[in-house]
Length: 312
Ligand code: ADP
Ligand code: MG
Image 1 (cartoon, rainbow, N blue to C red):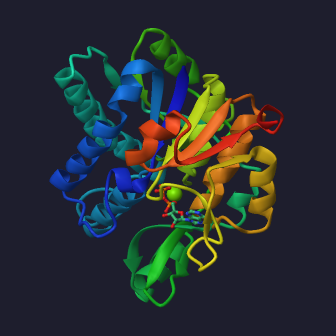
Image 2 (image 1 turned 90 degrees about the vertical axis):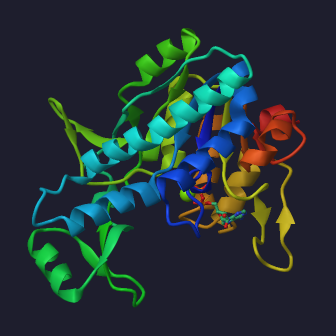
């Protein structure tokens, strides 16, 4: 089977950690322990988030501003794909080797096409990088950068988060899968690019779950597996009436999404990705944690989202 496995932020950096190299590598190694059997048995593309990593790159840039020229956000995303891809390539290869599996892992620096017409460009909403003083915020604003006050914590740059349309490298990803390779792609949602006469980087970030869905459709994956820090999706999440969901159809998921059951910046895009994937021909979407993924794939855990017609 073909599948996309999307790794959530926790798979790489846990919220309370500083994010040292050994912490991050340790988390990636632990995640690989949970997924190596799937990687052995199936054609797998791994996607991942990059929020804390790209945030740290931006903080470094701000701190070294007088000495080293800062890079635009698209290049920072590319940097983060390299650093996270490296950790996954090495950790996964090591665990596969320990179990006698000779499967190569490769990271594709991934460009994802977005449209300038996307309404997200009119109202940038996604905060990224360091907190600024009011003075620095004013300075940045003069340079044409959108900066907002962030809940009394200081000023922060906000960037658009447009809808992903197409992964430029999708044919290469598909051919690597055909050759039996494991592919890390669309890291951090991919590098946002505009497709005019030529490709050109854009100052934006793309949601990694929506980008994972684009990849899954492009490679005609059977399954889209989204790994995060909860074992299951819930209704009335974090309330006394919380009810975990074992299985639901794309239509049920859409109804709950419209009712506001899934928070916009976190579970919302995962559910939307699942719906899009099933409507684009996918067989099943699974949302669960890394430790539950093996049983979830056997239909025995996590939250399974299935096509409406197939569920009857
Ligand atoms: P990731 O890095 O894996 O994308 P997110 O924080 O973006 O992580 O999304 C996962 C989070 O979504 C969970 O930790 C949980 O707090 C939150 N969440 C919001 N709504 C729900 C819901 N209805 N059911 C389960 N989790 C939810
Ligand atoms: Mg998220």
